[in-house]
Length: 91
Image 1 (cartoon, rainbow, N blue to C red):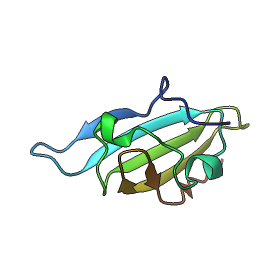
Image 2: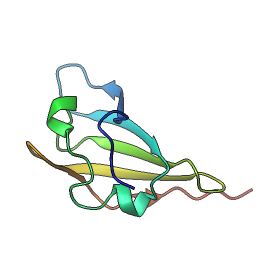
Image 3: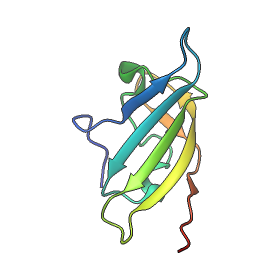
């Protein structure tokens, strides 16, 4: 599926004075789709910055898949994150 700017990532935390950011993004897209180059199209509008971190959740995987990625490009029409490192769950 394609990214929809009507369901953007949420800014969870930001360091006072700028810099480090933590974002949360949940969708039915696989983490490998979300971390593809140019998936996010409105990072500048959202205030994303290079060096921020994104928690990516695939909500329709069973169990949900969680990954962690860094923001490495923020441009006028595209924002890119690194390949998401999967969080593993062992019970």
